[in-house]
Image (cartoon, rainbow, N blue to C red):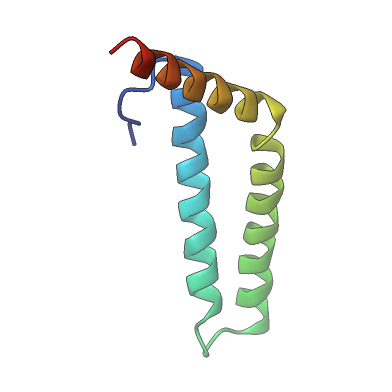
Length: 82
């Protein structure tokens, strides 16, 4: 996934990784909806889901928030120059 017109390459990479991890979480949630899962399958899916949520928690840190805010400021500045 390439994010359209994001000038900061670090932010672009972080957003791509965030999207991939979010897709994984959605996949695990869908798997958990199956009524025919064994206890072992549930445990494996929950383990993967736990890993993903930990990754998301560490991924969505202050650095990412600051990069997004900087990108928003850049967009605001470009609007003022038009």
